Amino acid sequence: MDTEAQSLGAAEAAGSGDAPDDGSPSCSIARALDVIGDRWTILILRDTFRGIRRFSEIHRDLGIPKAVLTERLGRLVETGVLERRRYQDRPPRDEYRLTDMGRELSPVLVGLMRWGDRWLAEHGPPTVLVHEPCGTEVELGFHCRCCGQDFGPTEIVGMPGPGARPGTGGVPGRRTPLRSTV
Amino acid sequence: MDTEAQSLGAAEAAGSGDAPDDGSPSCSIARALDVIGDRWTILILRDTFRGIRRFSEIHRDLGIPKAVLTERLGRLVETGVLERRRYQDRPPRDEYRLTDMGRELSPVLVGLMRWGDRWLAEHGPPTVLVHEPCGTEVELGFHCRCCGQDFGPTEIVGMPGPGARPGTGGVPGRRTPLRSTV
DNA sequence: CTAACAGGGTTCGGATTCCGAACCGTGCAG
DNA sequence: CTGCACGGTTCGGAATCCGAACCCTGTTAG
Image (tube, rainbow over all chains, first blue to last red; front, side, top):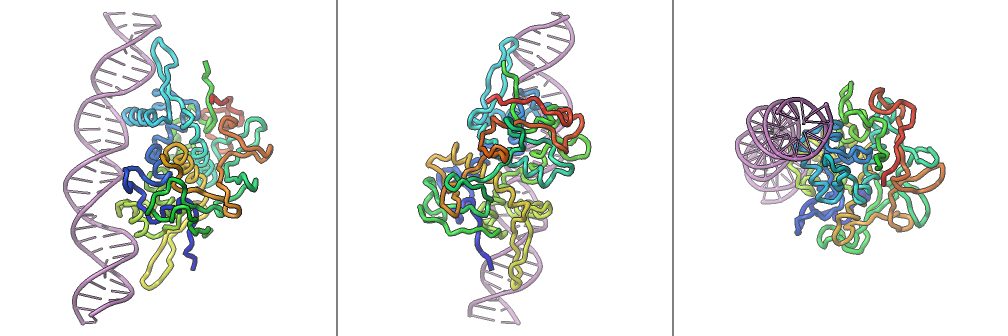
């Protein structure tokens, strides 16, 4: 039988997803989810990527309760994903803009979008993303700088990195013997 | 001033994120979030990618309440992201495995992981993903099949696709005039 | 045969969080 | 002075989440 596993976080295969000692998860996915792991938060970010940046605009667009929007925007600003910036003085109005940190979430958003396009869109993609200079549809995928190749998840393996915690699964520095089961 | 916007879903810039007429959102990101837009759900998927596939293993690994795990696994099976498969008969034991649909979420998971590595990992990435054939670290990014180039989010624009709803923002078929503000 | 145990759940209060509607304060504009 | 838009806060009630306890099936030990 195939008891082999597949990539993604092999280094802490036996650890709990949560706080082993210092209160923060030892997995980058879990840590990322502590910041943006919430439906509303992701939709707010989608809006800011689309240029919808003001409290009232986001509120109108999403139908999100104001109290929740206030809380989510505050948290995003606090963690540095968005910044609050005054864009006019009379009357004073602020908008919420993506920081570099926020902008680097684009692969996650695009990944969700492509997946929804592929598996959940009855009538085809509502929106198509194209490479502006040439108008071709954008691809999102894995790439190897060494081989120059594109490839799928089956060719990926995980191994402990510099931030691996002792006692959370893998022997530090040694490659965890995982292979794809795809 | 720059009132220009950035990619991602331009086609429904004025629409609500939710159900315009048939009860399902007209944005693929929102639709995707209806299926996997939950912290626990994503952590469960992370585990299945790592080869943790049994109820008790996931329960132990995440510390998730059993009732919640039962509900999430049921929903994932129902939507086709996971499948429940018997892997031994005496005693009867099942495991939850990724389907093709589930496996195609890998860019989202990897995107979250890279982002967490880059912005939230104090001591460096807990886990490193490498291209198995050559051992080089995996890159995740946008690619243009036409130009053969890799590029960032600033070179992406959104336009209405075949599944765009009338009255949700853009004129169908016409490119929405968005540019990056990065 | 009986006891003990693991896997995979279900049930049940109590604590959080979410939600929608109403209200509030500031700064214009008429 | 009145009205209005923006960006919130406050406030119950409803939905979720949580941990602990319990349950059923099938297996292994004595």
